Length: 85
Image 1 (cartoon, rainbow, N blue to C red):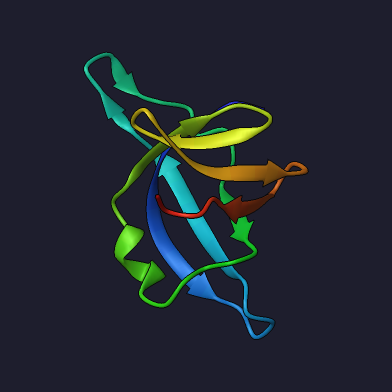
Image 2: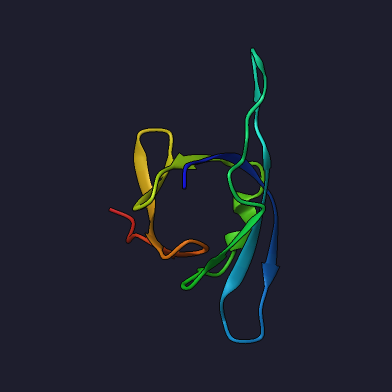
């Protein structure tokens, strides 16, 4: 369940969630394997679309941006963003 991707798009849903579309990240060795093509964010804030282009990675429990925990994984395809400090 690992993720190594870049956020290519954000699609808002009628229920208040948002889907992030994930694509392969360019590396010096070629393209990464994104691990998922899309995930649903349960608590997207206003302006969430600004995260397009962000590189994300993680495992079965968290999604990271660099060295910062960005979200908790809820199951295989859902995320809950962590509060900003």
